Image (cartoon, rainbow, N blue to C red; front, side, top):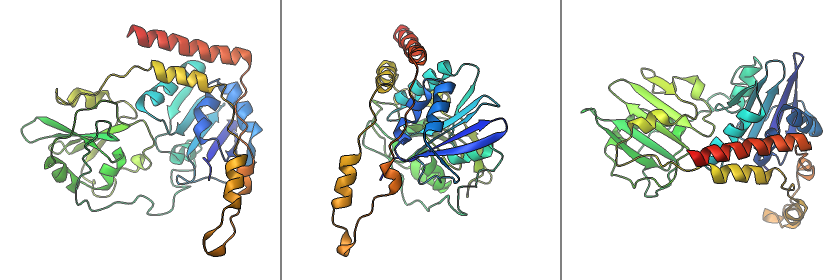
Length: 325
């Protein structure tokens, strides 16, 4: 139970890890007020001497004051929420290299010179033999898959799989995709997309979420293919999609306003659900035990009036630009 997050601070050549049991959904809000507020927030939470892995860590951030680099990842409710967060962070961390950590904890440990496999067990990336393609009947798919056909044309489908799952299925999946029926046109942006070009032996991928393992290319089965990883930039695939299957153009205004509202939201009181969990009957007479870490509330960023004004100013400017666009 919880939404675990890991924070890492680098200063004067040394680094320290921090942990919060409830912060994964607050990572972006802890970062929005800028480097000074994020630093105070990290230090207010518990120091630890261990790494969370990609399974247990649901959000993380690394603030490197020496190289003025911010790496972060957290789940976004939508494409617009991710882009809104990135846009605001770009303004409230001026002069910093602000990057989304697509490889999850691998990007953080790699930045520290510890490699990408420190928190991963051998064989952690699981492949599978596909028996079908997860085409979807919904207009809000998890991802969009496009394929260049032998005649040079491109078809596209909505998919219930996350982008990286299409790579876990191996190249055989391409034939299954080509044989799939059409799916509905999109009404909302997906979390990512994959484009296959069998003639050029190239696969292109973008995502607004973590794609753990993406830097371990070639993944099993793709040894003679080239990867074109686009980060969270969907524009190349957008330019390839057929006219009858375009990406929507959602406004960022609502997502930007939601970020501003969340800055002053109180931290949730978890005492009641924890009490219910501890009082519930366990299977076969076992006794539930509450993780002691769950009893420690998250110490969120407490922006100064000037920091809060800077965030709100950035949001207002971006809302104005979004409306003008």
